[in-house]
Each structure stands twice: as structure tokens, then as C-alpha cells.
Image 1 (cartoon, rainbow, N blue to C red):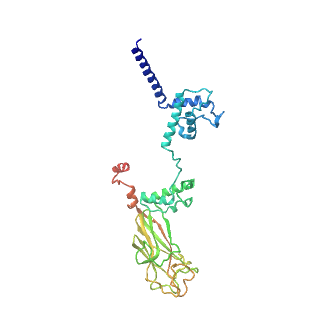
Image 2 (spheres, rainbow, N blue to C red; image 1 turned 60 degrees about the horizontal axis):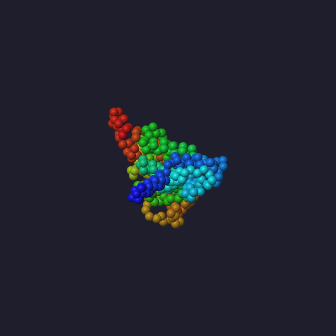
Image 3 (cartoon, one colour; image 1 turned 90 degrees about the vertical axis):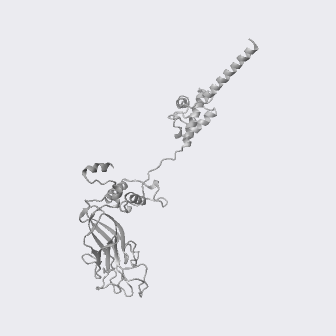
Amino acid sequence: MSAKVRGQSALSALVIGIGLSTGTALLAQAPATLETAQSVVDNTCERCHNDRTRYGNMSLEGFSVANVHERPALGEAMVRKLRAGLMPPAGTTRPTGAALANLAAALETGLDDAAAIPNPGRRSFQRLNRAEYERSIRDMLALEISASDYLPLDTKSANFDNIADTQLLSPTLMDAYLRAAGEISRLAIGNRTATPIESTYRVTRWVSQREHVEGAPYGSRGGVSALHTFPADGTFTFRVSFHHETTGELFGSGRAALHTAEHPEQIEISIDGERVALLDIDRWMHVSDPDGVNLRTDPIVVTAGPHQVSAAFIRRFEGPAQDLISPHEWSLSSTSVANAYGFTSLPHLRDLAIRGPLEVSGVSDTPSRARIFSCRPTDAASEHPCARD
């Protein structure tokens, strides 16, 4: 063979050798195969690392290469041993280098993918607290409610009442939420079959009733003003109850009282700023009377929905009272001195009660109904299309 031919043969053999070695390297760098990697774990690793022998205090029974993210610490330990060539140990039956490299690559891929999208952990159950519940109802149904009427106090953690770990949901609390949902839905939609109930708005003793109360008509003093949701159109009665002295007489009827038989104190009932009743206060009323120190209105027609209801006294004077005893900002500081000289005492409202509906006449359009109903059928044929709307 000539030198030229021998050179060409040597070059060809070299090229073929380079090609074979390159192919082997590419094979070693092929994408990790989960099935092959899992078979190495099942057939080789588990022979020593099982529930019975637990070599290295490790068991790989039930270990899944595809779910290595569930046991990342174990996966990292396996990768370190495989890349260092320490496992399987010398003297034992070992898979091929490609199979071990494939297992290490599969574990690394699973761990890297899990690290790229870390698991933030389990989101524990969290419900709305009372403040959040009130605002959710207001935003969804345009309805102001007091969650304290339906739900118990929220459990606090570090003075926070919105910590999920403390918001346990007991069967009793679930019943409270269900009852609240039923009553609130009837208030929002209106209830043509509503029965008479009584709602009471109390006035705290610690607030002065000498001045105007926000929400009440101008020219009035003291009393209470509240946003009340009426369940239906109909007739309602209003009862006002007054504070009395320790001896039973009306507070504010003493010697220094401003109202007389000729000019009695009066209390006004108003709805949305419009007077619906004006009641004269009998200065001689007593707790021993048949109706006590209370006054009631005749039935008054009110439409469904939220209305600003006020019960306030007609203001008789402006400016400070020139008493022998210096007036106190706390106008109901005591019910034992109202009958004394030198002390200007005024009747004080204790609470306002709204009872009804005594007779239901229908359900008017309300802000809540406008928020809920998007279609209003005018005949039977349009009822089904409106229901699907």
C-alpha cells in the first residue's frame, strides 16, 4: 500500500473514531429519561436502601423520580453521591455510566424545575371577619347591616381579627352565617310576607343630649338618628322611651326644667328628614303608668328599603345654661340630682323602637333590588328570557 493510501486510511480511521467518540458523548448528554432513571432506583438503589435494611438511614421504597420535588433534601443527597461516583458503592453491581448519569440528570431537572416555581405552602382556610362581611354586603347589595346582629365576636391573635390560624369555622358559626344570609337576602330583595318585628336603637348614657345629633333635622337636640332598612311597604309604629329619675319620674321634669304644661317638651319622629310625627311629652309621666315613660305613634306608612329615621327633641334654647351648678358636658351624669335647684335638666331619650310591618302593601324599588335585578318582565312571556339574562 502506498504511503498516500496509508495516509488516507489513517485519516479515515481517525475521522470514524472522532465520530464514534462524539456520538458516545452526545448519547451521554441525551435528555434524561424518567422511566430509565426510575428503573435504576427500583432495581439497584432499593436493594440496600429499603424499609428493611435502611442502609445510610435511608429508604427509597416508594420514591418517585418524577416527584423528586416532594422530597428535595433526599434528591439533593442522591445527586451529590451520584456525581461523586460514590453510589452505588464499589464492589457492588453497578449500572452503566450512562444510566447513572441519566438518573442524576433526571433528579437535577426535577429539583431545578421545582426551585424555579417554589411551592409557597398550603393556604389555610380563611373566612371574612365581621368588618369585612359588612363591607362585602354593602358593596354587593348596597345594603348597610351590622354584622354583630348575626355573627359572634371574631377571635383575635396579637390584636388582629383577620389571622387565618385563629378563624376556626365551627358548626355554630356556620349556622350563624346561614341565618345571616337568609335574613340579609330577604332585606335586599324585600319580603311580601314579612311579619311584625321590633328593632331597637339605644342611645348611650355617655353622650350629651343638649346638642344636635348628626343625621337628625336641624333645630333639634339629642335623640338618635339611624339608617333602618324596612323589609316591605307597609305600616309601622315608632316607640320612644325616656330616661327617668331613681324615684320613677321623667328625667328633666324637675323644678328647673324648661318645659311646662303650656309649653311642653316635644320629640319629633322624622324619616329622611321629613317629619312624620310630633309627640308632646307629659312632664308628669311616671314608670308606674300603664305605658311607663314611653310614647308611641299611630301606624305610619313607610316604603321598603333603607331610610334615615330620627327621633330628636325640638330645641327650645341656644347657648349655655346659666345654672347655679356649672353645667357639665355629660348631660346625663346622674339621674338623682335632676330634681334639685340650680340644675337645668332636660328630657333624655333612652331608645327608639320601630315595629312592623303591621300591614304589608307591597315591595317598592330599592337600591338593593336595582343592584340585583337586571331585567324586569312585563308579562308572562318575558319571564323566562329575563330569568336567563
